[in-house]
Image (cartoon, rainbow, N blue to C red; front, side):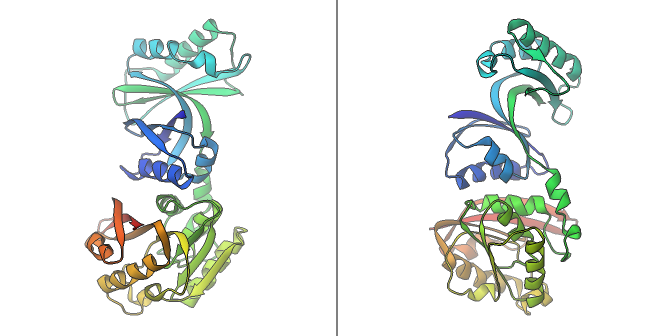
Length: 343
């Protein structure tokens, strides 16, 4: 097993780490927690870092972890010097050292000067050449709290892709659409397997479907509004996604389906989107319907407003809560993000 260091985005307190762990499980790999620091997660796993980087949204980089030390210059140099770095860098490779800080960690350390000292120490110890312009390998140090973790960069997450796919840039737009980063995170929280069948029973114009399709899932989208279904089709086709089925239908009465994973963002009771159904009634009737099409031990990731407690409603549907996250959307709305597993 490799020891991987995940540099997290920090845009939410719990979601980034949960997304990493869920994505590994979606790849049918196990993991063992080594350590968790502010915006940093170290796991032992056989998961492929390059594949994970293509899946993840709330992660910046994935590295092969070398060492974690205290955050003084002496401790950092000693830890890097005592690590397995000589064995991990192939002979003759060029390299560069980059050190970043999480928030305001270790403000007394000059990261540029420390990077030079680490690079000089490595170059002196072995026959490696420093190349800041175009290195073949990069050593990344993260100052976080009272610690510094070092790793060799294995894969970088293309975070700019989510900005390019922002809802307002799509041909079909609806103001209630989730931002792509959260949509992708939910797809991962649902443990969506590549090549598996993914359902969004409140698909709207297809924001969550889009993210599931990009990672290689077979898509099924359902919405009660035909206009939304037409918008979803336009958006999926605009991204070149072809393996999808879109249905005008009611999430409370889903047709005969069998899916591997479900992620969805119901419309929180807006009358135009729920055919006049009250909020609690909508969830109470939709959860058993969703559970009915989900494979045994499959996962559902679903949002709700904070005032609605879904755990009790889900029990009767044969769903067990795995995790729950809270996200403040704006002053008058706090969103709950639940992950349930079918028994």
